Length: 105
Image 1 (cartoon, rainbow, N blue to C red):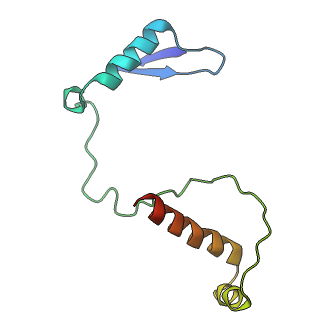
Image 2: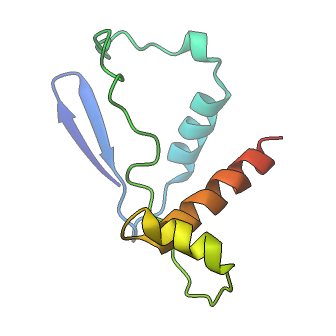
C-alpha cells in the first residue's frame, strides 16, 4: 500500500502484491465499527440539489453472460422480435426484473 499526501488529504493506494498490514486492518475495523454520525465528513463537499436526477442504477454493472438454449412459444418470440433488435437482451431483462421482484419479497 502506497501512501501519498496532498495538503491535508491522505490517499491510500492498494497494490495486489502488498496485503494490508495488521495496523491497517485494525484501522479499517475501527472505522467500520464507528457509528455513521461520528464520522467526520466536513471535508466532503455537499452535492448540489439536482446531482442525482439523471442517475441510472446499474449502468456499469455487466454480469457474466452464459450461452444457453431455450425454447419459447412462437407468439412470445414474435412479440419480442417485433420490438426490434436485441430480443435476447429483452428476454434477459424481463427475467432479471422478475428475479429481482421475487428476491425483494
